[in-house]
Amino acid sequence: MSTNRFTDTADAGQASVEDIASPKKTKELMQKFGFTLKKSLGQNFLIDYNILHKIVSAADLTPQKGALEIGPGIGALTQQLGKAAGRVVAIEIDQRLLPMLEETLSPYPHTTVVHGDVLKVDLKELFEQHFQGVSQVSVVANLPYYVTTPIIMKLLEEKLPLENIVVMIQKEVADRMAAKPGGKDYGSLSIAVQYYCIPEVVTIVPRTVFIPQPNVDSAVIRLKVRQTPPVDVEDEAFFFDVVQASFVQRRKTIYNNLAAKYFTKETKSELEVILQQSGIEPSRRGETLSMEEYAVLSRNLARALSSR
Image (cartoon, rainbow, N blue to C red; front, side, top):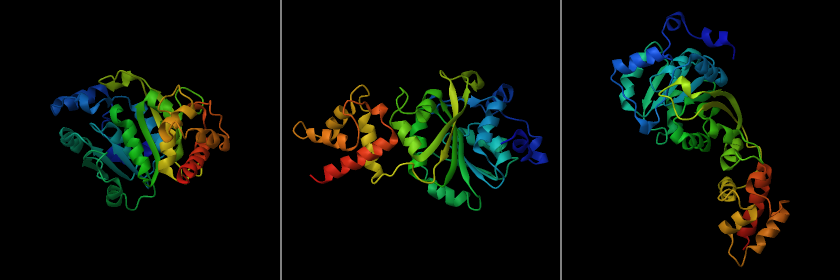
């Protein structure tokens, strides 16, 4: 999305509102409301407008679309979402931030802050309540590092009607989500995310653009939600079970990992036959298998186990 399209969505009143994403404004707001950071909540506030612009642009928002934000903090990203989207809902777990958000988001009547833990909120009900009448919804957020994976997996496993998930997360985790077979970053998270989405790392974010500075660099990743999975899987739960079992001990072969999970000493010879049927050498490691190979393997393994 172009710069003009991003800025032009704000009306004249919104355009005059001071951007929150600066060190000066962030510190002013924290001082005004007597707010102190909670390390346990992974609170790091973004103070760079250019990064915010990249995040919002990657979500491809319009006044006809909606945005769900998780962890709005003091509202720096929420403010920009309010300019770009027709409907914005932000879920904030820290009750102390609600008065600050009420002030910073007052110019944007189409934004709503919901107090709650996203891992406990009924998201389908939230969508029904707040996103009626919008064409598409994207999740756009600066996620706390310590709950990144549980949040993203909840969004995907609940099969919400999402267009994109654009999030700023730890760079290492973004690399794992976008990794291809054969590399050290490729694992069960890569397969799970790529089963549901097409990932793309949008930009790397240095630690210096946060208050306080985290210990690691971040990345903005866009997960374009697929309409249908890229592989044919008969039993999704078992497919992911096989994938996870294959990475329990990364240095072990696929044969050894799966034998430990599904077979006894007396029956594990069956696994060699299943791997051969699947076109997979028993000596390969889990990180070398493509998603397509895991789909075939899980299908053949499920049939063999059920026929016992």
